Length: 377
Image (spheres, rainbow, N blue to C red):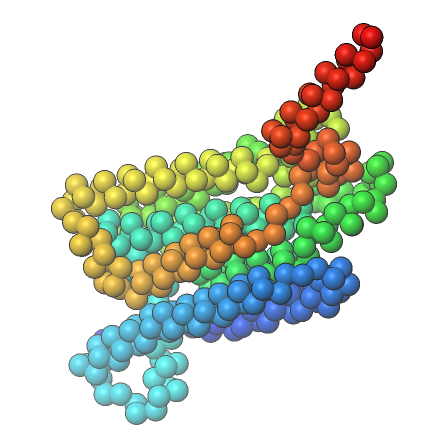
């Protein structure tokens, strides 16, 4: 029986690979523009950090390319072996690859490989929750720091596992630098000039919307294993991917901290990145714990969980991405520049916004007592 030809699936597959290269090039172009127009002119000194995160991004790209290529090779080999038992191979590799792309269900096989059992999905779910936390951070910091072409980082995170886009985004933050942000804000007047509302501003996204989008993503993860090997699996995956774009749509002022807003009553429902990320972190811990408990209840041991990481190339790809994401996150927390407090950045008296040590407080109290004694004399 002749296999059905799916030209639409083949087109999506090849377009997927082309877009991965296009978005990578576009993101690197954005970093180059930041380096030449912002970083050099501000004379910031983050050379060490730039080298570290450039190396991490390169390691991430090479490693993820290898693991994702392994997924494709396994799918191609399985398809070739299946066809060789029924029909003879053409002997023409490009023609065999084209035939494989038009007859294989690569995206479905990838998704089903992740949700095959609780041991595999433990790794997949943990990596995908890390993806959610990262895109929220990119949306928050990217809007506040006015990263140009922010959409390219989100597009790249849709095409490739998140650690590559994450490290490139850290490079973008280093190239903008807190010093550059502070100088830009100091040049602005205290009175905000009204700007033309964009469609996103008109929608009035709020903290509630942010949390609901994160909840929708987590719900998709919870449903994915329940609907494994059913036609509903791919729509669930697509809905989850679309919900990851939501942080890109929220304007910067809806991520503002209360200290930087003149009238808190008007911003009670506005989200801060920390608030949403705290919710995501708590949810991720609960869901990861529940999945681990479910795996144990189903008879999987700790050794089985470790073995599951190598059971399928798709699981290995996300597991490696999770490790790279954790390394990048840890490096950023240790080596990333510290941004000044919101009050100092927004033009508030810097001495009022800066933290005061206990020693300085004691000196001030002692000086106040002396001045009080002189006044009484």
